[in-house]
Length: 215
Image 1 (spheres, helix red, strand yellow):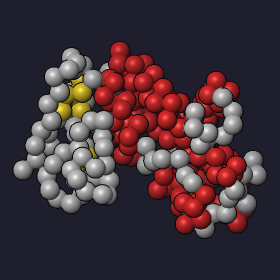
Image 2 (spheres, rainbow, N blue to C red):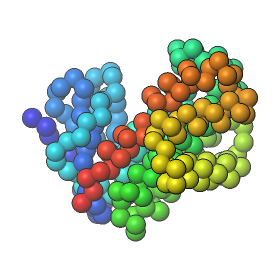
Image 3 (spheres, one colour):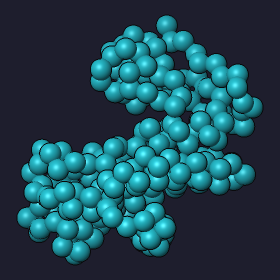
């Protein structure tokens, strides 16, 4: 039997489903912010859409989205997909994947969250990314402020592809792979391999599922 999670520390501004359930079938729901080992199992919980809701503040929603994002890729993880990369190249790839994931997340926020809460969620999410990933150097040597124009450019580019040209998530992943090839980050031979990787590491539909039952 699934056990609901109750939060008493803050007022709840909207409701979304607790979309992470243990993949081992124990019926225990992951707490927010989501932790992979909440139920005592080693593997991260599978993303499933539940039929009941949990109340959540914007801060908790931002934490849930951050924890749903794939971690920046390492050289060894890239090698598992057959993509050859140095430490520097892996940082550049991680940076582009981050931009792609942030596009999908912020699009999901716009689609599912009441307008008055979007800015708070976005601010908290970006601050988590900055502190956890950017300051660690996982996404290159540039400062967070220096990255912002690039992030804004990617957001506008992907939005144009989706909103004006009707490109689907796989097509957007293909565009991201092309951008990396054009910049010389990956070789033409690795483009198809990177596309497979992007489908795994930029789970566009999952962010919408996490927010789809806002009440």
